[in-house]
Amino acid sequence: MWQGLQYACRSHMICWRLQQWALQIRIRLAAGLVLLVSALFVSAMTANGQETSLVGIYQGSELTDAANQLGQGGYALSDGTQVSFDKWYHSSWIDMRFEMLTQLSDDFGLLWGASTGQRAEKVRIQPGVKLGFILQKRPTPSTTLTLTVSSILGGDLTERPCTADYGAVGGFQAVNCRLAASQLPPADTLKYMANMNPSRLNLDLRFRAKF
Image 1 (tube, one colour):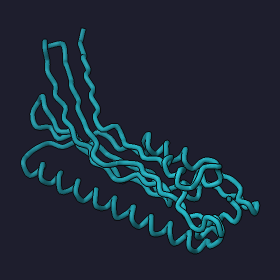
Image 2 (tube, helix red, strand yellow):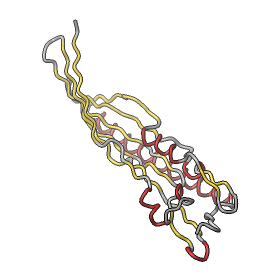
Image 3 (cartoon, helix red, strand yellow):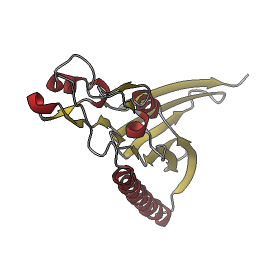
Image 4 (cartoon, helix red, strand yellow):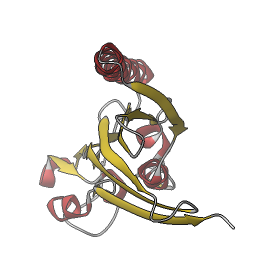
């Protein structure tokens, strides 16, 4: 069944490099769009007299780690050719995100940010937007209660299939790249494609006291 298993562009480095170049261009365009929207948001807040500060800049996430895990390993084709997952799942750009805080009052602020996402040939992390708020109360002069609520829109990780040639019997079929050499029928391997979401809702409640 697995005789003659071949992948499109497997022996054509020029084709593979063109695909990588196209992916990098799309990443830069997505990152530029995210930064443009963020800049417009900051400008609007500044015009209204609101104070906006940078909370942090981060690179990588739990979904980045998951994408790296997908790229580990490989297998051998029927003709002995070694196939590594790394070339399909490795991204030259690591998902980067930033968080900002726009203070509306002494006890309330808007928490917002965005992420650029990252792309490889067979796995993608989409750009995302983070929205939330921080509410602070002082039950007594020496104690502070802080509630942080945030949500992430977008930012999903999705995996794409390979196209494999199963010879005269099977022909060309879509198959999970990581399971193409398994005993599963090609259609069944698609059930195990990675599809993950970031944490959609985050709640953080903190109590601080001074003695």
